[in-house]
Length: 379
Image 1 (cartoon, helix red, strand yellow):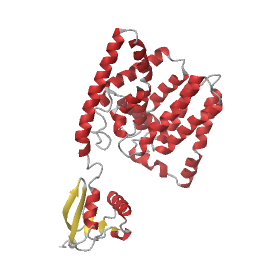
Image 2 (tube, helix red, strand yellow):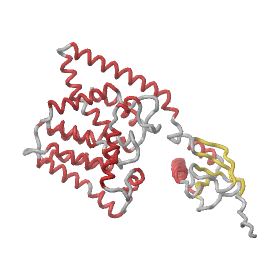
Image 3 (cartoon, helix red, strand yellow):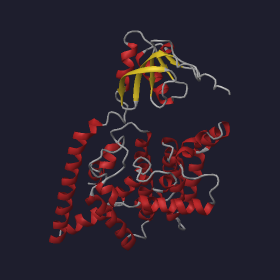
Image 4 (tube, rainbow, N blue to C red):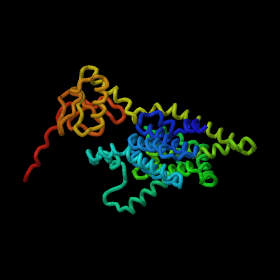
């Protein structure tokens, strides 16, 4: 039932249909959870059983940029397992996780700053902020991202991860998640796995809280996964109660009907509006480039227009087009008269005429150089 619930969660449903590296995060997060759950269920806390958990956390580090913050947080959440019989297990997991970070540390030493560039581009943290200021802003962001009702009625505003017009979470699923947390805190605090699961839920939004975007579906994917996981106690409770009480059967029916209706509305919206998101996925770019290459032409791209450069080189490689037919102009350079320019963010530094567009991308024909500015007259 939990697998079905996860598969019918719009947030995860949409994530599974786009090619982002974060799509691997649910796998490695789930593997780490399964490792802890198995040890807890069997009561076997031998240190060797901690190694799969360490490996899964280590894999999170390499799967996605946000994993480099999430994995250490989840490793820290293992303190929820500490006890006389489990301290060696936790210590082994920590040491195993540290071992998986050795290649990363070697890379950081060889390429200083390379792994933090993406974080630097997305974080609100600046050099002039104090530690208290950073912590305060992060807490505010964290609380904003925990406004879970927003995910029921809406979702991420970016169209490449969420189709506008439907929620990202099922209301019934969210109710079960909240009920599951309540049940854990009330009845299952002594269970090591559920203590860790709640701790993992609590730390999962932290990496996203350090960035400038709110309700960012990609960075908050671990939070979506943990919401499904903590619904397990509530689902088990409803199933058990429904076997002997009418009110529980009525509750189960209401939850099932509500989930089915909302998921049906989401699927209808996804089928109608999802395919219209061609511009965010740059789906028209190959057709633009084919118009130039079909006749043996060459595309010229402005020196600073990076996205068109990457796309043109990628599609040229994919189609076996010679590298010489993708020309990055020198800084301030202009293509030959009559040549075709391909761009997005940079305007022509010369007189050109656009003749084809797809979203933000365009093709233009070079007409002439701009006349040189004459010197200002002197009196």
